[in-house]
Image 1 (cartoon, protein in one colour):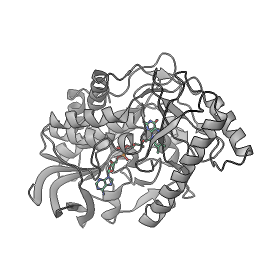
Image 2 (tube, rainbow, N blue to C red; image 1 turned 60 degrees about the horizontal axis):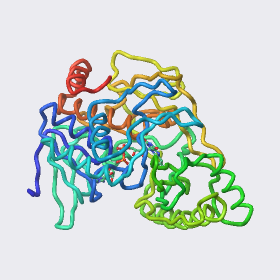
Image 3 (cartoon, protein in one colour; image 1 turned 180 degrees about the vertical axis):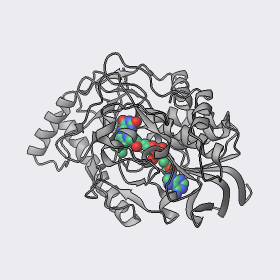
Image 4 (cartoon, rainbow, N blue to C red; image 1 turned 30 degrees about the vertical axis):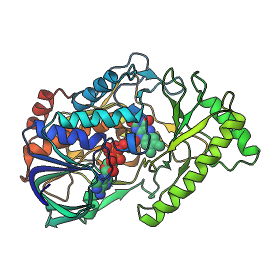
Length: 417
Ligand SMILES: Cc1cc2nc3c(=O)[nH]c(=O)nc-3n(C[C@H](O)[C@H](O)[C@H](O)COP(=O)(O)OP(=O)(O)OC[C@H]3O[C@@H](n4cnc5c(N)ncnc54)[C@H](O)[C@@H]3O)c2cc1C
């Protein structure tokens, strides 16, 4: 590997949004480099065992698929590995998702990138950004051999936490108008579960009993995402609230939540019917973050607006997940989008307002806190990712962007806008 890489588009972060951004940019003709600090791609799907793709479908029994393009290809490849991708409307919320084993997401992402012309690097952490008066010139990364530089004409921040924007010294938003973010959680895998469907009300009843018996669990509601017809699944309940993303805060949170995981395992073993012999196979590896920094874009999506399912001429992706808010230990709130409806995501929500050549994708795009509760899901992340990559590729270091050209290229790439 050269220690100084030059390209057209550099993408930071290899989660749903970043992989789609890199593939979208390269299909649009840009020489593209993708950087990921983990030893695998997939983002929180693989690094935090978030094992259901939400946002691919509208809500209700008569759902439609609203994300295609790179995201649609990922679903088909998961199916080829034996994943049941038949969408499942939730009995309690009506929301529709596809659950998977994260090991197959790792393989699928590898395949997608190997089949593309993207130059991609794992084990590579971005630690510095050179921002020359609003033009991002290069990012600096580190691996176990030392440091290397990536110079690009345009950049996509798909880091989940707007790290590139933040390290460039550009202002971001954190949480709601009072600075409160949603809970972050440490998912863990449970094996030896009964094959039956696990119902939310049964989980809540068991956790109530466990709490009364003195087991120190904090959150009393949430989900076990069970893989259909199998005896394993992933529990996303152990939760905390992050005040920032410093090593100090994250260290305390990881250790605290590993303790919580142990408490939940004991609670389920003792108080869930058929869970006596469950074992914990793995946690994390890392805490999953629902809400942290978001960019300030040329436009901002507002929660109150998206729930009426608006459509706009500058749309580059469709969102369909009902805003889902985890701020309480006793309930999860949904503000429902009408059944079988979706809303437009305008291109301006992906463009960082205070930089000429910087785009955002996935959880970091420009929204208020309520709208983030919808667009943060990974199905939508694939769609905003592909759009950010295409926009970066077609714009490079020009200050203005042409929405129509981005839309035409996305349609050519099979995306839904
Ligand atoms: C507990 C929990 C449950 C959830 N449930 C669901 C669900 O059921 N379905 C759903 O669709 N969504 C769910 N979500 C939301 C979803 O997981 C995230 O919002 C989503 O992963 C965002 O995708 P992304 O690609 O934007 O970011 P991420 O998946 O976070 O990917 C960002 C990538 O950037 C990399 N990165 C960051 N900084 C650097 C750096 N400096 N150098 C190199 N690499 C870097 C990271 O390592 C990471 O791989 C859940 C989230 C949580 C926490």
